[in-house]
Image (cartoon, rainbow, N blue to C red; front, side, top):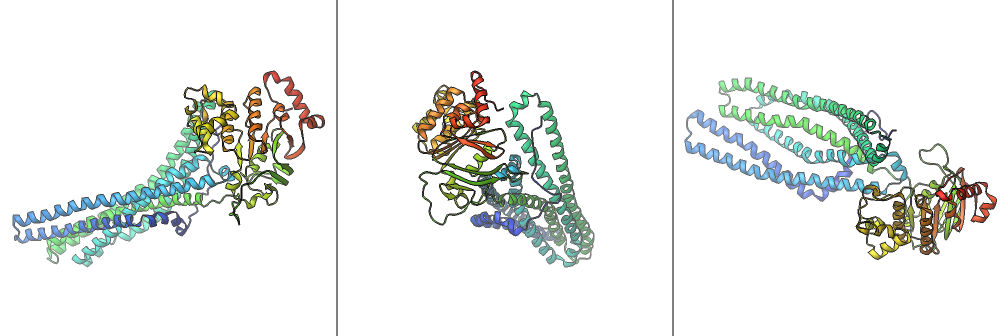
Length: 603
């Protein structure tokens, strides 16, 4: 058994999106919190300049010691100045950390909210192309890389720029030629950083894609844990997880090789500059071209330059990680839904009797090889409509199209007499209740799951919906009744209970259209009758579409549609189809024979 995993389409060389497009993700947060950012950067720059004053103080002390004109009180005064500067530096350092790192967290929250809201707005084709693991990786690893780049990356970049320019300025003031000699190795570092950064971008993109695969594999195994245990596949899945993990580690090690080269190169360049200064600067002191205090100050400034040079590599690493992740996030949030969601020219009123008219509807899935539905023409008005047919005949696809989960060409589907492609999705879906084949429940209370579509619903309304869905007595049998926590995906409930809970959720919303895509398959026959009676009471004068292969349920509907190979094979009431359709008649005879076991079968 294999738990399916996949990763998004990618090439060996990641496509670099222009920064002008990427900045649209970041600029709103920078504008909103600009005073906080400016305050933090101001504190950071003040820290840098205060640190640059200390070598000047040391120079005065060294020159005074060399000339033997200093007194103990003079040295105490200089020490006091250094201590005062250090205390002020500590205070300012706390301010910039609080403000800039705090800003990076606010930016992270804003981008995460944009990712989440965009995902919720996407259509079914989007989720067919992207795994849950990939989407989770965007909201975790990718977002963390962006946060680091806009937090510590921003700090390190500004700090390195200010510190290096100021330090070089002070060095030039002491001796211009010595400064030039000390900085000769710098171009080598710039070239090496550029080459290594390009490699880092490609390798980090691979790491993020493999993290998506690892996350998706973990997620799919966790939600399928019962199946894995039932087939005793624990060892097999553990070995697969280990293989994926090793591949992820190997890719991380390839990134670490680049990261491991950048910092040593920066240190090497700084050390080479230090050797030059020790030799030529020492000679200048001997020749009394500069004082010993100047020499000590120059060495101190050069030592301060080592951090900016090392920061070049670190910043390049953070920026490349951040840009790579920002590329991926940008690709996600700029993906457009295939479903049109137009803004209406005038305000739409609530439809009195919404229903559907299908006109020569033909549909092929975005990644499909051929049409699933072919030339369907139907009228689905008020009443209860049953839909049946062999496996693969297009029943579930029809339900998804009625619920507006996939795009269609103009003129194929009308809702309440209006072309669906000219109606906002929220408007259409506000009229539709949908119960799918697999009930989607959350690890929350029973009441909260029923009230998902109406969080403000009163307890009395929740109970009424549960009664109509024939789940009320089962809920009362639970230890905490409606406040019972049902666990991940409703694990504490039976299949039939989960389906009826999902139905109660749709009933509570009280929309004029209800679509049930085989959502009663796990319900026993007696309860099925009770549920259907509740539907008839609740949906009087409304439109209900029920997909089922149970003849007893279909026989109670007003109108039955039989699909075959994506087309309407036959339609009518129970008696008409029993007399005219061989598939329906065979289903009826088989189920009558198997009624005592409650089985549903197709020939």
